[in-house]
Image (cartoon, rainbow, N blue to C red; front, side, top):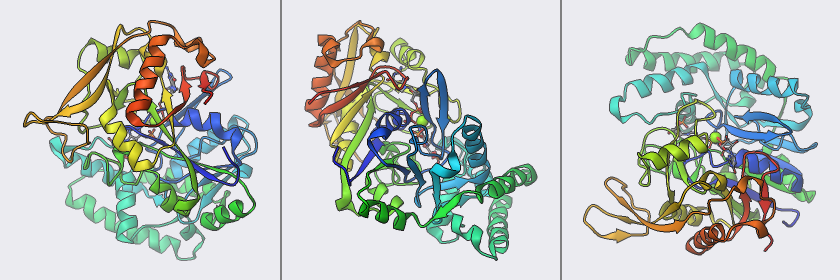
Length: 425
Ligand code: GDP
Ligand code: IMO
Ligand code: MG
């Protein structure tokens, strides 16, 4: 990595690829780590020194030395959840108030946004998105409707009136949906969260980022969710409400496109999805169960069982192109250790019988076309050097690199920070 650059790390699938782990591993190479979109719908898991942390709104660079961590303008923040997350880190000895700053332009998730999320999902019947229930969609809806409240509004004397006006508008919608609720406990926790949040530094993060760049500092931007959950390019409407792709780092931090250097695209050696929506390679058999069990595929935020399937190279190539990925990071390869045969989807058969390797507008009724690989039947979790990779695993990696026309520069073979193999080029 060259200095004086902004690199981006983001998910190429449907989220939970292992972004938190790799951001933590890469942090020593950077001066600053910044989140640019999403909010507490994210659950980024880090495991080191026998300890496990799940970060939701706080960047995953918070544990590695005195790096500056930024909550960018593109994010949505729930004060109550922020307080719970931040206090747990403070209790673990992290000097958070020194290391973390929050953009004044980040939007606030209000208690009524969370209620609206539940009410709107309940009203959708069989068309539910299967959201995380954290108020993400309603908060971004208000942002785009120009009725949202931002972190910087907390400094204004009329904040309480603005809050009341937003709350009343939400309550009108909740009534129209006949949604029964008790706002008091949520609002109490939220107000405590707001008081706590006020102790942090609120910044004009776009000016801060520009200044850091002028000083020659390097910045790693941490994506949340994944490319296939992007509001524009994901499997709409079964998506999240922000731009999860690389362009989101530009709008979510105020970074000019020409300042973006490397784009690390992170993918599992197979595929998972939480919530509803198309998933062409989903498995409903013993192999799917095995992936789920061996990969401990349960949501880090909601505890829901993740749907599992073979790796989908059609969707991945789409993701690689949308993001301009320069480096692939291959995660959870160890989960495939016990499979005699491993499959990778290389094309889709469309309902009219034709085949395509371009990701289609509509995934309804598409059938995956697979290439089969011999499994390596070796315990990868203790491998520390790529020279020790079994031949079958090298074949699998090479096929992925060729298909995606992008090199795999890091291979993860277990959840711990140390179970990471950096490849020599
Ligand atoms: P994120 O949202 O992209 O940060 O990913 P999550 O933390 O939601 O999900 C990734 C899960 O896989 C977590 O439980 C990690 O501890 C775990 N994990 C990460 N890398 C590996 C790996 O290489 N092998 C295995 N077995 N688990 C991993
Ligand atoms: P990380 O950052 C996996 C999914 C939800 C749902 C859809 C919309 O940990 O990878 P939302 O609450 O955002 O309105 O839900 O998006 N989703 C995720 N799936 N990982 C995530 O984050 C996700 N964040 C949202 O399950 O299908
Ligand atoms: Mg996650």
